[in-house]
Length: 393
Image 1 (cartoon, rainbow, N blue to C red):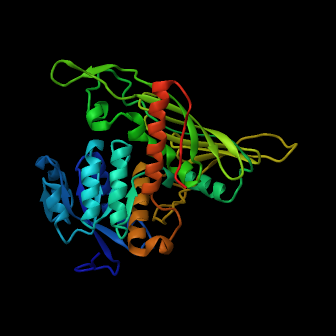
Image 2 (cartoon, rainbow, N blue to C red):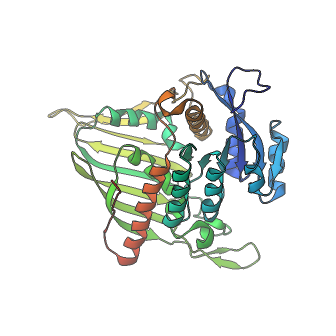
């Protein structure tokens, strides 16, 4: 980190971005909105960008005066001693090579899910991390930073639910409902992996359950391929090789109880543009938050013999990190990205124990757990059986 030529006393984390597509631009936008945050003693500065297609870096050069270096070879970016940390957003088949190279270069990493195209690739990334424990590595997952999700997290931590009856978590959208949508890398097994929608959406779904210690002990998977072929952009069609939708029935065992947990990841969910949700039902309280209604949280507190009534209230704009935004306004996806990046930079600057609030980004261990679940789900689909999941102690 550096504070050179910084008019503010805040230390600066100098970032490189590898992968200049949609999510790279979202990160750049979040960095540009850093003044939206209050009372955070660190700030990012994007000084280098890299994409295999040189034209993709043009937007960054035009939009960000801080960008000093552009590359088409990620190794050149990693050789730049001025870069402290890297955000990497590339297709899944590139995760193993790029993530391990970033870690071994000594630069901190926030990488996109699923942290490897499959379990073996994820294990190689973990091996690189073990070689470099000084490097902070985190996985991108924004939705738990919504105020409503933060409220549910506090309720779990406070033990408000009593005995858990059941849990449902999911991420649904209808982006692939139109069969005329051209095929992309997420529909090809070579680039997206056999996980399909699980690899692309599943870490978002598992982030909070993993954080709560709710590790599935088994899984019965129902995986669907709904649109078999799509336009190839060349006048013909190409086969869609990956799963469109996944419904995973799992069972969670804790020291105190066991309960069913349904995890669902859907690229074809009519009527849902980008809906993330979590529902927890318990003997003393039930609660639900969904980005479908980002300003609301539903809860049902219960006492024996009392009426069972759901209460719906607006969730004020009370985010993990304070902002200039008043509580009467609505929180959105760009805000959640800003909050996630604030957590990453906070941890880099101050360490886990020194963070100004306790909710940190998704960890590599949580990403590893998702690979255990998805690998078992693939076996369940092949065998039509419930597959046990063995967690390392």
